[in-house]
Structures are given as C-alpha cells and as structure tokens.
Length: 68
Image 1 (cartoon, rainbow, N blue to C red):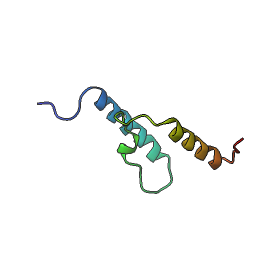
Image 2: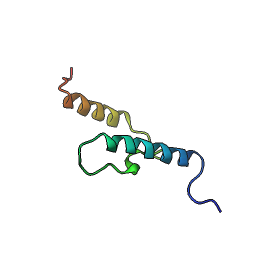
Image 3: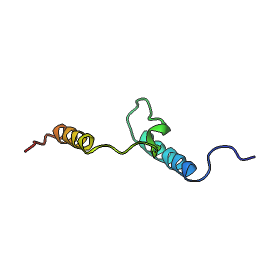
Image 4: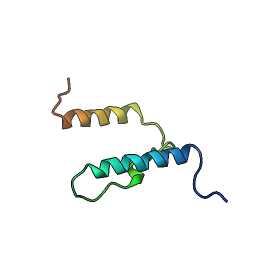
C-alpha cells in the first residue's frame, strides 16, 4: 500500500521541506516557519487587477516609493 500524496503534490511538499530547512537554519532563534508556508497553493482564484495594484502599492510604500 502506498501512503501519502504522489505526483506533483508530493514534489511540491518535498521542495517545501527543503526550502523550510534552509530558511529555518539561517534565521535567528525564533519560532521556525512551518513547511506549509512554502507549499504552493494552486487552487486559488487569480487576483483581480485592483487587488494586484493594491498589493504593489503596498510594497512600493513599504520600500519608500512614491506614486505618480
């Protein structure tokens, strides 16, 4: 009997485990990031143009940018 996911989902989980190990090994002593933070979420609906613009505006503001 085979247990666990197979195929693309398994590959995503394995890659997420490797990324989590690297990130958590190279951070200060805080609570580690869970593997689930690095697994892609493929079943989401695509963001609207307005949502993308709002996200980019937030990033721009965070790094000190201005809007024209």
